[in-house]
Structure formats: C-alpha cells, structure tokens
Length: 144
Ligand SMILES: [Zn+2]
Image (cartoon, rainbow, N blue to C red; front, side):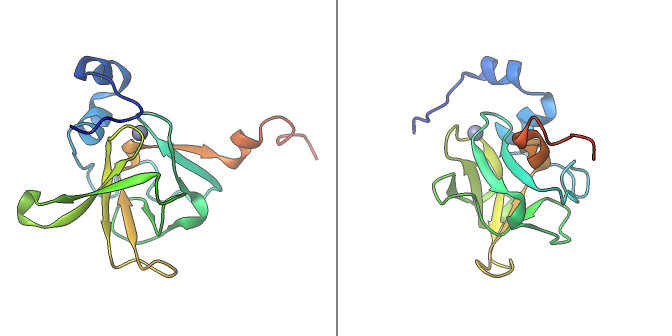
C-alpha cells in the first residue's frame, strides 16, 4: 500500500474527524447534493484538506456548476491531489484524493469551464475553508 506523508490508523482518524467527515474522507462517501457548507461560498480564500490541512484549492478557481457540490476548475498545484480510477456504482469515474494523506475528496469530470475544462466536484465536509480575512490576520478588521 502506498505510504503518505500523513498517516493515522483507523482509531486515530476516527478520533480526529466527525462521523460525517470520516465517512467521506476515509470511506469514500459522498455528502448529499446541495447539503454542504461550501456549495455557494464565494468568499476569497483557500480550501484545505479537512483531514490534514494540505492546501488543495483556491477560491478563484471555484465556480457555480449547479451540480450541488463545491466545484473548482483546478487544484492549487498538480501535486496537491492525486487521481485514482473508481469503478464503484457501475460507473468509471476519476476519484480525487489528497496527495498528503490519501483521504477521499470527490471526483473530477471533464465538463468544467475554461481554462482547464475540468470540474473538480468536491465534498464540503472534506474541505476546510480559510477566508482571506483569516489568513491576512491582524489589521484586516480595523475600523474605517
Ligand atoms: Zn489530506
């Protein structure tokens, strides 16, 4: 089995994640469409892996696909995620996993917008949004 930079045993993952997060990230589950926290998020910032904090997507690449899950046209870098062939549910799809910890994030489809033509269809519970205000830290909220 492939070794990842960040690894925990099943007990460790269960202790770190909520049951919903565990089911998606560690058991390749899918949250119901239009249920996730980030489906309509437009705020500037970045999305990290909920399991390990690896930076995965930037808000600038997020778009409204109408599919019911947060959608991006590309990851922050090609090596942030990895692709696996997924033949479950009678379909052949391309699964996307976090390259740092191997957790399941969602799938990628080829009906996305320019410039990549790709749609990274991700589960909200697999992601952790970090707003630009938070990453800018002190001084951002100063009164005007
Ligand atoms: Zn990860």
